[in-house]
Length: 421
Image (cartoon, rainbow, N blue to C red):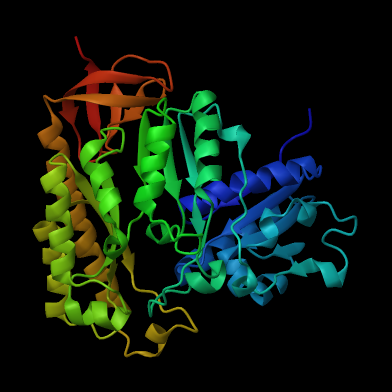
């Protein structure tokens, strides 16, 4: 049996989903000796790490065909084309086309070595159905791609293009197929999933899609949502949060900052008060809800007082899981032209935010001790609670099953448990 190509994925869950599409296409094309890098461009550090990994891969596997794709390749194709280690560069649209992997002159002819078209011209999201995910305990389904917003710090729209949605019928069909294959938990993913539907006939909202999935796939045990833009959360989605326990009570928010002037300079569409009010509104209808958030430390012009507002927002909104980014100027974005903060200060502020996040997570986990939680078993002795807390239990269980577990202990990062009597 031929070996599968090696896929090295950087960045978001959407990239991880798309890497499975790439794997299927490259395997079907017989590229079992290829190493494919699916890159991220969210920070300059992510791009640097990709280049470093490419050089390492060439040293370790001199015979391999090295292909680079993803957001960094879309935005900076010339950067990777100049690398002698790279055989081919594919754009974000091209990486999802099976024909990109079957050309006879693959990686050789100059005119085919770089295949990166204008991502802004793409009008549809590729509706790839990944049957290979059907045996897993959890699967991600891409429901949307691209972004119509232009936050001043963000380069991602130039890597992903404008917002495009997968029609609801295709999403529901894929959920049903995965559930029939044994998948216990589905997570809906995209670049801006709360923008889902704006480009579809009738402009449905994300709440409509969620309600349809929950109604039409009664066998689905768990549904999760990835990062939400709170100003786009509609009434039907709030009703689903309140009314269906299969929608998991863990919500990750795209907050970015907790100071109103910084939010304005970021060109975000919410205020500090909006963030606090949204978390309070969700807790009113779902008291067990927990929240995660993306936060940027050291945005240009951020003073110590502005940073303190972001730091204090974590407690005021009741955020449990923090995903902290030290600000990284991306060439071509408005924020890169703003007065920059000293790198030492940026890193120190990011460290303070992370420390606050670690303390809040540890407090949450300690409070779980003594509770009984429905744990989705991922491997023999590990799983996750509905609140996305990682759990290790004292005896192996069957992957894919949801088991009642008594929480017996907590470390700073995970829970300990045993099957409930």
